[in-house]
Amino acid sequence: MVTLNKIYTRTGDAGDTRLSTGEAVPKDDARVAAYGDVDETNACLGLARQHTASDPVLDPMLARIQNELFDLGADLATPDRGKALGWEPLRIIESQVERLEAEIDQLNADLSPLTSFILRGGTPAAAHLHLACTVARRAERSAVTLSRIDGETVSPAALKYINRLSDLLFVAARYANGKGAADVLWAPGGTR
Image 1 (cartoon, rainbow, N blue to C red):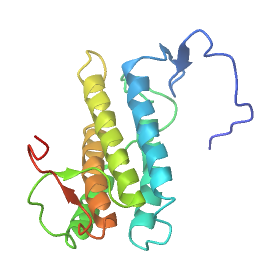
Image 2: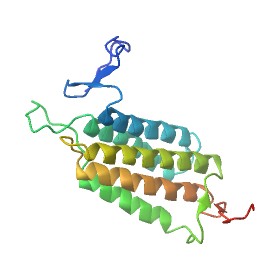
Image 3: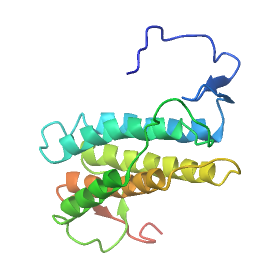
């Protein structure tokens, strides 16, 4: 259980923070950037949910994903250094990835096939979900960057989860756009 009795601690005033292991790192460390981008994705979903509250399919899905993004952040904030931690770190697991895949298929089943790229926008819910999708893709890039640094690891399930999440958010945006009916298709060179 997390207990936050004091919000400011002054310990980060010099530009450092601590991972869940207690290890001090700079605030611009690749690991901090990765879980920061995940947190920003979560905030985007909070905005999207202001417009999906009455949707019995999307809103519960997004609520669960917001919680899982904290799980993903905890996973990324806990590096695997091969040392015993004295506690079991929270990690993303394959069943969470599989559930995202099933939900992508569920939402996509109601959509017409795409014939072009689509412009990001549409209904307020769709616009916020498109934004969340792009931020999730940035989070994925940050996690991949972290995974390629010598001595750093990111679990394969965490990488898969964030990859599937961006896919789900793209499909969810189309779903929120009248199941694709309100999508605006890209017209290549259409403004020349």
